Image (cartoon, rainbow, N blue to C red; front, side, top):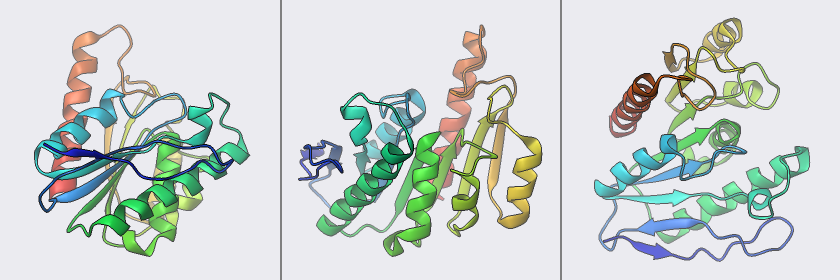
Length: 216
């Protein structure tokens, strides 16, 4: 069974900042880092299921919590900058404790921007694979950061997501390649409103594709 390891980290304003870092007693198959959204935590299904499934395959798992979330404050520009710094510290702390043959990042919404920032700035993540779930396409927070990355990338978005922008996606495609899954009529959480079967099917499809991408 994996052990819950405490990383001695603090938020940018100095408060203790707990992250869920589960480490296998034996050599790990990889490290998966989940980076939640503003209002979509690490226990959200799109982050939870890949993390649990990879954990069962011998990966270590690191579920990041941002300082503004633990303080229950808003995600203003300063808070987002702090979340990026805190996420980088958490990844570095995990990589200092063990070397990994594979590293995967899964970002959700705001977490996509943080994943892109990590990929662009952290040399240790040069060979990582990055998953971007419902990124904030067409915004200054995501597009310029993503364009700077070179890691293999998988992206999933719903056509009913307020951030869905087909023209902006094409602009990004011209800057760098990535795999894309579009879920018809799905919202920012990849839920198809009023359609339980469609919502569960979307979750299963994206989870399977994320798993295949990260373990390729």
